[in-house]
Length: 170
Image (cartoon, rainbow, N blue to C red; front, top):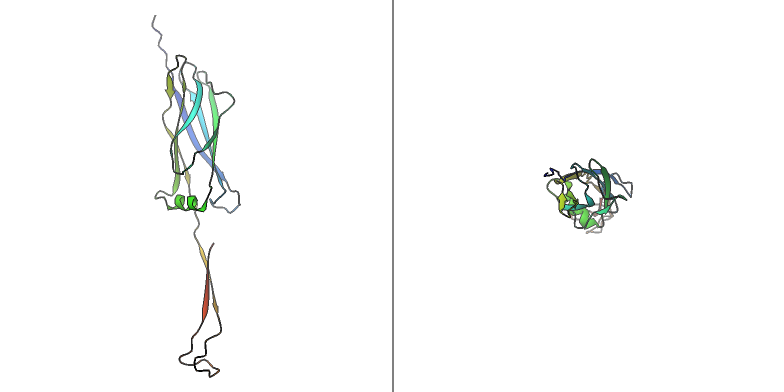
């Protein structure tokens, strides 16, 4: 009697609110991106050693993924993996904001082994972290003493007005 069975996994990846380490209200160096990976065994056979595989990530490093205690999924069972990534440098942050789509794209699959040792892989699931960048400059202009070219003691033609301009990236 032939057995008709199916092995399948589904993955739903979600980007959660990032951890705003410096409480600036915008994504900055030291902030942590947080993700969940919800994997469900949608087949009718047990899938073991389930893991998350990053396939696309806009940042140079890897997401740190934490597996649940049990990575073997019985049919219809669901488990949640978590992931995090900390923005490490200003250069990395600048590259993120320079991206054309103004978000951080991330795509993953889930995979595991069927009872015969074959690989079972989910379809890809993606999550985006939208950027809430804030670009601003402050300018402070200050007048300094003028240069009295003719030494008349008063401002006259030929004298030089001196200023300082302090520009800060806020």
